[in-house]
Image (cartoon, rainbow, N blue to C red):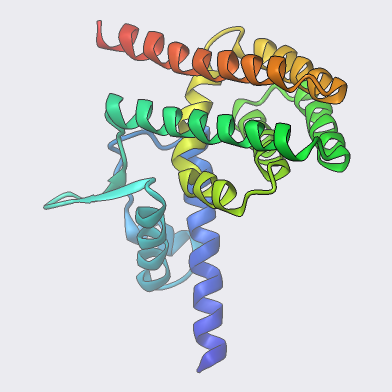
Length: 219
């Protein structure tokens, strides 16, 4: 009985990951309905694991249930988008302030440099977004604050989805790579003040990019 339950949970997680990838890639867009029987047929299972997967995605903030319509890909309001990005900016500002207090961890800095090397060769937006998240997550971990790290992790998939929209704007990936390299160089030099200023401008530009994108969409 426990084995069957474990298998079902593993399948639910797998289906949730698949749907998440579809959302991040833009194969599923806000308002698209998630049809349980289609995923059940695709995976050769009953609807129960699919229903559990959709429940997991609703907790993550990627899916919402609408009365008489069912489960759909969540469409974030402008305020929700700005709130997520501003909270992210605040947490990263706190992280770099702690780095200034505790010192730069060289192992974490090397990890950021390794991730950046992958980012330089990546042209697929959703994969670049994942690498970008790893880069910033490593910066947060360098703060050695479990509270900041936990709060950052809670932003989860919705943050990645919003960032992927920003990277879709022409030139944003090139700008991102350039500024990430500058950030690494400043941290390597121990110039925390300039690194903090750069990070603030870098993150503020993401909000500006989204405002421009949403502004043109509403015209």
